[in-house]
Image (cartoon, rainbow, N blue to C red; front, side, top):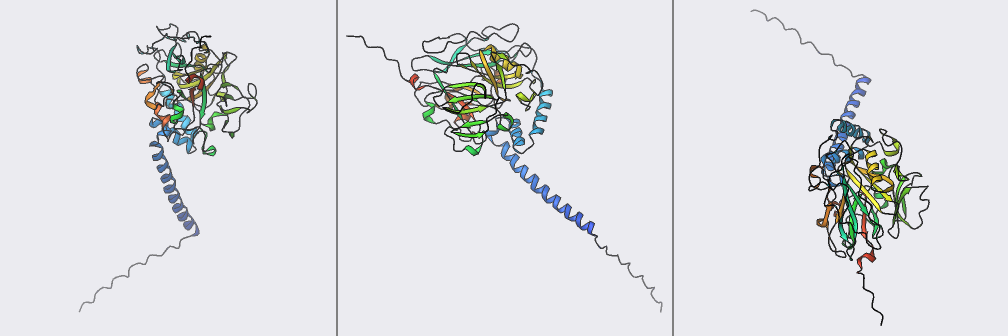
Length: 417
């Protein structure tokens, strides 16, 4: 009998005893994975919410930018915006559309109203027919006197295919109100006496609505309303001051204004860009901190600004292809003796005038944007008048309403007996 060759016993693997370093690395790996899941899950949820939030803007780009700034990566957003603006500069040369400058004419210098300014001289070398001519828009007083006029000009002598809208507002006939939001200035002041949506009662005298300024973390200024100082007012800051009687002033805090007596609201944004009737020096410097670093000051992008004339009228300018120096130049040409930048970028520059009989409640359907598809084509303002009548609108804005006396018809004097 042949004996079987005995098979060698299988080699036993030596069990490795984990060292303390292996233990710590495993723990670190697990913690890293968990943190990554939580982090990306959180950002994924907030990003989804932002991209579907209309209060973050009309376009996807604006919503992504708002999301980034809310999540603390504002520097990255600004860097991306600057890259985008370099790669997509405003078009040079060309002509605007045939309806670009509106109807023109029709100026009424009525008794009791401020005198409408002269035609705006165009920043372009050769003015087009109708460029810079004022024409009345929106509701009139009950006695038929226009309270707002609009005019349109090119932004400069280079970007001649674009138009910028300018509105002149008669502060003898109109009263101003600052509406506040849960995003700007923030929830710490809630509830606000004036916030979106515009109520039916306020709509009865509504003539115009326009955007306010930067988010407060970028505005380099303060905010006061409803008797509350929500952000400290900066000495030297450009300021819109609205008094309790609805009158409005614009200037430098600490020089032109010192007290909150009789004041309803103060909205600050950066520094003045027009002072003493002239554009201030230094506007052509890239990223000068006085006028914000959100986007370079020399980029020709959507911007808006507000000025005040020597007789107290307000002038608003807004549109595409504007550097901050161009904006100041247009406001100066419109008669502003002091002016400031408001908000910028396509989603945040909006001015709407409202039509309809004075004294009757209206809604967003009565509003028309100053730059719309008829006169501006593809360069129309993105936001619609409807946002100011929406419960979800969270940013601040200004309204201009007819004063109560302008809602009463003038009565003829009775003949003496």
